[in-house]
Structures are given as C-alpha cells and as structure tokens.
Figure 1 (cartoon, rainbow over the protein chains, first blue to last red):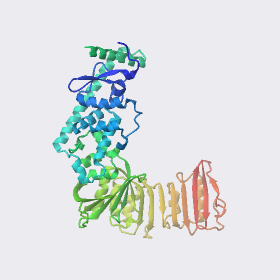
Figure 2: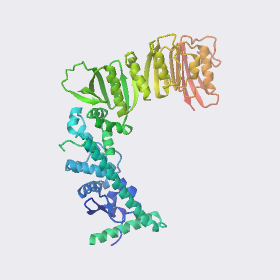
Figure 3: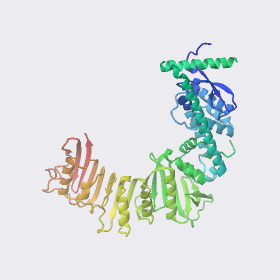
Figure 4: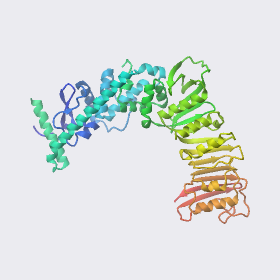
Length: 203
Length: 314
C-alpha cells in the first residue's frame, strides 16, 4: 500500500443518498468548487456525503468530470454547436428526469462547465420559438409545485450545511497537525484517506 | 426529452444562467408565458445583459438592443381596435394585463386598449426584466405620451443614454423641465431642439454629461460658465467674441474641469478688434492653448461665426 505518486491519482469516497459509496479521482472531484471550498486543503475523514443525490446521478456527474479532466481549463460558456461528440452523446443518452437530477447535482457541486452546458441545452429548447410554442415546451408549475420546490431548496441548504459541518469536523481533527507546512498537511491527509480507501476496498 | 420541461423547478442560479443564455427577443417572448415566468426573469434582472431601450413614441415602437447592436428586438404597440392580417394572434399576460400578441420576424406586435397605456406598461415590463439605459428617438417629443413616459422613467431613476426634447410652450412644460433638469445626473447625452416660448428660460439644476442645443439663443454666458458637461455644442447662440474671451480665460484658470470638446456657433462671433486671450478670432485659428497649471492643452479652431475647442489631457 504505497502512497500515490501524484495528487491526480488520489481517490475519494463519495456517499450517495442510498448510503452506497464509490470512488472518484481527485482530479475529477476538483472540478467541483463545492468540494474545493470544503475539502481540498483539509482532506476528508471518511466518505464525502453527497447524500441528497442518488448514486446514478452522482456517477453520471463524475463521469463527466472524469472525462473533462484532460480538457483545457474552462473559459466560460460554450455554444451547444461547439460540443464534442462525446458531450452530445453524454447529454442525449439521458432522459428528462436524469437530466434534471444532473443539473441539480451539478449546481450543488458547483461544476461550472457541466452546469453551463446544461443551461445552454435548456436555452436551446426555447430558441427560435414564439411565446405559444415556448408554453408548449415548458411546464408551468402550480402554486403547490412552487411551494414544494422551495421546500426542496431548503432541504438542499440543510444538506449543504451538513457537508460543511463534516468539513469543519475534519478540519478540527487535523488541527493537531497544524505545525506541519500546508502542503505536507494536505499530503498527510490524502495518504490517510488513501489508506482508508484501500482498506475499505480490501474489506 | 419530448415531455414539457419543468423550467421553473430548476434551482434559482441555474434558471438565471438559462435566461442569460437567451437572446433579448427570446427572453421577452418567454416573459409573456406566465406571471410566474415573468417574475423569475425579473428576479434575474441584475444578472441579465445590459440593453438599450429606444423609445419611439411617435410610431409607438420600442427597440431593445445590446450595446454592440448584435442582438435586437422590436416591440410595436397597436390599439386594440387594430386588426392584423396575421392570424397568429395569442393572448398573454404582460405587466399584469392581458394583451394580444402577434409574433413577427424581428419582434412582436402588442395590442393594447390604448397606445399610451400600452407604451408605458411595456416599457415598465422591460425595465423590470433588463438593466436598461433609455434613448428617445429624435422628434418623438411631438407625441402626446412623450412627457408621461419620460416623467415615469425619471420617477424610476432610469438612466438615459440619449434624451431629445423640445420645449413647445405647453402649460406643463415648466413642470416637465423642472423634473428633468433636477435629474440630469441620469442623462448621458441631452439634446434640446428648440424652446418655443421666449418667456420661458430653462434653468439647469444639474447637468448631463453631454449637451447639444440646436437653437441656443436663450443659453446665456452665465449658464455656460456654470456648465459641467464633457461635451458642449451650441447652435444659433447669441454669445459673442467677448464672451469667448471670458470662457477661454476661465478654462485656462482651471474652470470647465470636465470639458473635452466644445463648439459654439453664433452670428456674434466676429473677427473684429475684440480679442480673445489677446488675439483676434482668426489669429486664434489652429492655436494650442494651455491651462495655467500646465495640466491640459486644447486645440482651438475658429472660423467666422464659430469656435471649436478640443481638450487634450497631458
């Protein structure tokens, strides 16, 4: 069980709403600004709980992140016509429910590139249409549905708070190592997580 | 994804990004879908693109376009009694009212019970949706609803990119002038075509960035000396050669701090014995003058009946 040679090989465990865990590379996860803000410099003690989203959705989101690891840095929204064949397939194979789940998860994880492409895809549904045609394309919600949406957003805010608390808890645990330089601290945390991950895999 | 898309169930920021991806026309047409959609678009106003709204009160047309003119949309207001040959007419909720809307290639035609109300409501609808600057089309001050529209916009503290007026001697002109002259801080380019009533002398309580007066015989030296505009253009002025000496001396002493360009045309600007900065009008032609503290230079161009001054910061 040797330490990984580079940070891109570090794997993190992600926990879904079903309680299932799966691993995601550090490089893919770093496309999430939510992850960067909460865990990048302090590491995570145990699986990272993104428990507001199911496994299929999270896997789909991180499939996108893994794919775009080697793409050049994101430089703002891209027109739908500029999407690669892989990107188009990625979107086309999703049904509407999965697409909405992916947008929600991508928004929560703050993955700019994926969120932006999803928005462009929605905008495309409305392009070149008059108002009557637009009404046919979109579902106009009832008051009850809007109320339900607000409740969901409140629930998500609570979930975000839970993730932040987890990050804070991890930060507290690593306080004893605070005399170490930051880079060493990050590496130590990663090694610890990798060992944990490997032992988890062996079980 | 053939079933209707639940647009309003998207997270707020995602929804805002979707609106941002739409063109001006798509966003306006989407805002007519329902009050809820319109409210969400309004909520995203500060996140939206900046647009210029050009009001043509005479033709009851409102043009909305981006600063680079790449994206534009036109809304025409018609009276309810107007019947279009276009059968593609639908009723939608606009600014809390129900109106008939007809889609055309470059915009929409909206039928309202009367022009003025329609014009005001649609303008308000756009102000809620976009970060707007307003321009008025030249000569549209002749319309009956020019004053009410401009008053409403000043009440809402909207910025004007370009405002053209004519003081036509109507009984409400004094009230109208007082309102706009107190709000010139909101106006980039202000143009007065004429002041019809010789008894009415407009007084400036504040100044726009740029001023352009077509018949400026009422605009006195005192007014000019108080002017803080960056660009001043006066046609048909009564200012004379002696006044130019006062103006240029004030500038040399550090006055007209914002001035970048000035043009005065007057039959009283003559090449006679009266001197400007110790020179007669024609000797001043092509001269570069400098402020007393050496911080600015200006090129002067003169001709019979006119002077132009272009300031260069050092």
